Amino acid sequence: MTDVVYLVPGTGLANEERNRRERIANELTPNHVNVDVVEAPGPGPSSIESGVEEAWCVVGAMKGAYDIEADYDALVIGCFGDPGLRPLRELLEIPVVGPAESTFYTAAQVSHSFGWLTVLDELVPMSAEQAEEYGLGDRCVSVRSVDAPVESIDHKSDDLVERMVAEGRAAVEEDGAEALFPGCMSLSFAQRHEEIRERLGVPFLDPATIALEQAASWARHGVSQSPKAYPGPKFEKLGELLEIRG
Image (cartoon, rainbow, N blue to C red; front, side, top):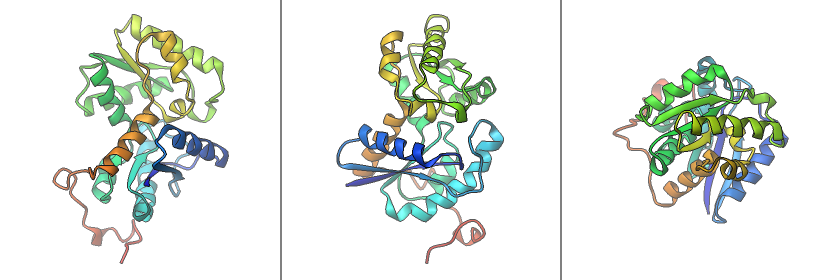
């Protein structure tokens, strides 16, 4: 059995939604993969919709990831912004996967130009910056908002699907996107990808599936981040951050 933890930064995930996401995550992965959805310890933001909130959540994510590393074979960061990707890869020996990074590179493989749907207008600049950070700024031709604050997202909402279709169609027809994906894990876990894909006529990728499958595959094949690229920290300096294991 390959055990993967989907670590949610922040403190806003209700138990009912955590259980729903855990059920979906296990449905999305093969039978030999077990996925646990775990919320990082606080304090932290209830949702991540700014650079400030993104930075705030990383401390709790590091503490939580370090405490549970021994129980898992791989970790997926439960936020599309990939908050803490570098420090988590430095801190842990198990593979750490960011949904945005894995989805970006998948989109670049199945298309020449891609775009995505973020939740708020305020996140458009951060999203474009993220594509640049991953070296794909020239392939990213569209970032559009569906005006859906994270804490208000209803995975059963047909209105939200209509907004995703409308903005997605504009991204394809006006911006030249050849593949799309939701730039938010709450949108991803709405699991409306197939109907949106059919209506848009281009790949509409699911970050949850891609990230979880990559994490499980890396763990199964012994792939993890290079210590040359992500050298470990000096743990003797981290006493106030971590409960150092003996």
